[in-house]
Image (cartoon, rainbow, N blue to C red; front, side, top):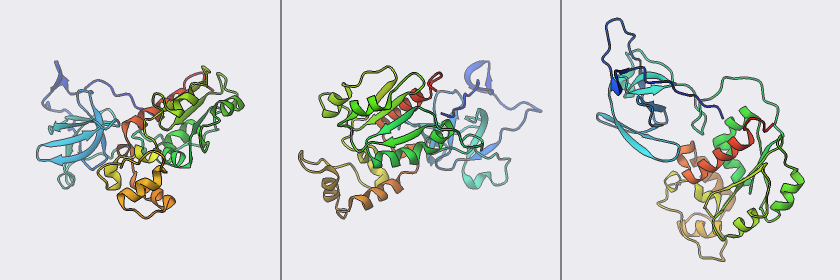
Amino acid sequence: MWRRQYGADVLAAGQPGRLARQRPGQREVPQVEAEPGLVVEDAEGRFCGAVVAWEKGAVTLEDRHGRRRVFPLAPGAFLLDGQPVTLVRAEAARSAPTRTASARTASGSVAPPARRAQVARASRIYVEGRHDAELVEKIWGDDLRDVGVVVEYLEGIDDLPAIVAAFSPAPGRRLGVLVDHLVDRSKESRIAAGVRSPDVLIAGHPFIDIWAAVRPAAVGISRWPDVPPGQPWKEGVLRAIGWPPDVPAAWQAILRSVTSYADLEPELLGRVEELIDFVTAPGSD
């Protein structure tokens, strides 16, 4: 993954977390428009997140795990790409010195500089179905292309042990598998237990279907409805929320509603990041 390590708080004066007044001759801290989705870090380096709300004298940030914090506005109170900035309303920044925010991928990572396409690694990430693959591509596609990782879908994991054996995992050929509904005593957990290899990582989220890993608010509902056991889950969801009984069209509407990691549940975010780290670890290729 493309990540940026932030340095120490350059505005700290004597005590950690204290903001210093600007001294004569000191370079003016640039102002940055606090547009929704802008990712910044607080000056103490304790919280990094995207701007999701603005109110008088404060801004709300949400990190990639869905946690939100409200921060008071002050000159130089935030870091953007490791440099101090002052967040201001968009209209207030027109006549002040500004800087352009670094481009971000949908996963929240700093977008890498343009370069030639990477040769695909021998290591792979497998996901259960097409919808899983399309969602991973939409949020992590740029990151995966940057590190040369290919994602393939399986159309189910009933034959997972045989699929893993056919892949022939090895230290330079790692395999990560994303599994839906990987909870205790589930069919999925029993299947996953049959795979044993130090070069395979099976990570799963608790949702019965990848649709439910999308935050309900992103698709305009209050919650994903419960579907009685024995009924097709997707069709049951569409009936409960009053959508037309067209699963492909419904999925495309859900997928369009997802624009960044902030639209996904943290239980999915963490597992995908874990798989990417596993297949790109030093010595894995």
